[in-house]
Each structure stands twice: as structure tokens, then as C-alpha cells.
Amino acid sequence: MIDSVQFEQRRRLGVATLNRPKALNALTLEMVRSLDRQIAAWESDRSVHAVMLRGEGRAFCAGGDVRAVHASRHHPPGPGDYKTELFREEFHLMRRIHRFRKPWVALTHGITMGGGAGLSVNGSHCVASETTVFAMPEVFIGSFPDVAATRFLGRTPGKIGLFLSLTGARADAADAMSLGLARHFVPQARFAGLAEALATESADVGAVMARFAADPGRSRLAALRPAIDRCFRHDTVEAIVSALRSEDSQWAKDALSAMDRASPLSLKLALRVNQEGSALEIEDALTLEYRAMMHVIAGPDFYEGVRAVLIDKDQKPRWRHSSLADVSEAEVESHFENLGDRELRFEVDGSGEPMHAGEARP
Image (cartoon, rainbow, N blue to C red; front, top):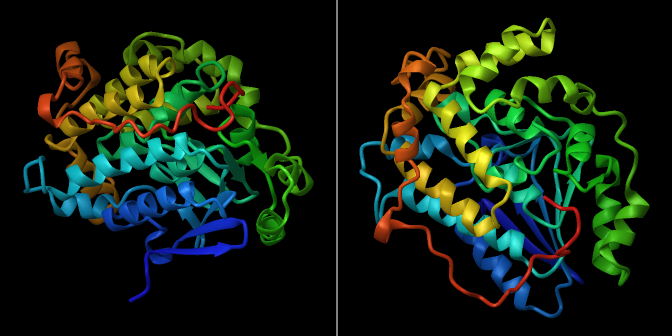
């Protein structure tokens, strides 16, 4: 049996390869646990000076394995439940990556969405390539951007992070660089040379990166920022929709079309976490998301969204609410109530501040 995550040490460099190419490297619970164990081991191994994460095949990582979550839909959330354990341990993994005390180099290519964005953006050195496609499309499957996206999207310039959250819009390498989601742009043809340099050279990782980096070009989203800020500055999804309808442009029409396909509840949850997440430390952001996620997987929209988009592929989800007006503020707020003994808890591991604390990093 081939391991779904493969690990090796190349001299000074620990290398982890996501190896479910036919599933676009979607994260299973087994993969999350394997990554968490190995990262912890590498952190305490003095012979490992940096860690590199890559994906096999045409995608870096398409996110969590939501098909497996859908298969567990009849099991109530709680201890021993697959979906509960997957989200809990995935969120712990995101925190470990963010607090990792050595350089974390994520070489992204192709689809880098959901949990794949979390694996890369939460680390110290997210590398985008010419094929990288960043997106957080969770609202289309009845969920909301998680894996600390409430924090890293909330810290993007202006309202672009909220735009990405509510529309699932895709960002290329130039966009990711301009938004601070990626720290470096390296063409895929240079990945092998970069890995060899990281494994053999004692130079600072940033200096090595600078030798292999290139100019990603101009960002389309950065050019749209004034219009995006104008439409997404409002405090309610309804007001944002109204502003988009007044905007005579193709990007606004595309945004409206995307939001029309999303779960009304998901749109309001995505707005709520985005409004709060930017000011939070990663532990608090993940706790906020986990509370909402436990309510999401206890409700119908997530399973209906996965069915419509990924299983039956009819693209016709029957959401619990027929419109935004049907989603009350009280229902939204109920998703963020303390879970009591089911709260997400983090062990105090003495890791201190994240790598490069104080730098302009999501």
C-alpha cells in the first residue's frame, strides 16, 4: 500500500509529499495525523533545518476529504466521529504549522484550495508558481472558509479577503503575492533546484528563495480593489448584494452569480467570521471556526452542498434557507456559542511566537 503522505530527509531538509494525486491530494484523517506526527518530530530534530511540503500530481491540495465527511453524515458529531476528529485534528495541524519554529516551505502548484491553502498560507514561506490557483470555495458546499482563513483572509488588503470568502473567486500567483497569501513566486521549473539548494546550503532560507524567485506579473484583483472595497465594505450580505447590483461591470455580475449559488447561511457565517477573525491570534481564530463548524456538520446544508457539487454533480443544491432574508441574526450567532467540554483546546507546547514574528505575514 502506498502511503498517502511520503516523508524523507534530504540532508538539512525534511520533505513531505502529499500523495493522493487521483483525489487531488484531498486530506484524510490519516494524512492529517501523519503530517502532525512527522512535523513534531522534525521540529525537535536538530539535523533538520527546514521543512518542505509539496503535492504529487496536478494539484497541491484540494482541501479536506469532504466526500469522507459526507459518508459519516448519519453519525452524530462527537468523540469517535470521523468528521469531528478530522476537523479537530486538521485545525490542530494548522496551528502547528503556523507555530512551527523552523522554516516551513510550501511549494504550491495547481489547485490550492481550502485545507490546501491552510497548509501553505499558515506557514512561514508559502511559494506560489505559475499554475497555482488559490481559492476558498466552501460557501458552495454549505460551509465557510476555515483552517484559519478567518485570519489570513481577514488580513488581506481592503475587502478582497471578504470578496474571496463570499464568492469563492480564484486567485492566481500574482494575486496571492499582492494579497500577502504567498511570500514568494517561483516557477515550477525551478522547484527541483530550490529543493536541492534548501537541502545542501547553510544560507538563510530567505536568501535561497531570493535566488530562485521571479516576478509574477500584475495582479488582477489588486486592480479591482477600489471597486471591491466599495461593494464589500458593508456590514450585511444583503447590503453587499445591493451594492454589487448597482455596479455596472462584469466582475460584479460574476460575483453575484457566484453568491447566488452559495448557501445563504454560509454567506452570513463567512461574513461573520471575516469581520472578527483578522484581529485574532491563530488559536482564537481556529476556536471560532471550530465552534461554527461543529454546528455546520450537525445541519443539512453541508451534506446537501457536497452531494450537489461533488457526488451527484447536479449543481442544484436545495439549501435549508431559500433566501438571505430567511437567515436570522440569532441563528448565525448560535453557531458561535461555547461548546463546553467539546471546545477545541490547544496544549501549551512552549513553541513561543511563530516564525518571523513581527514581519508582515498573514
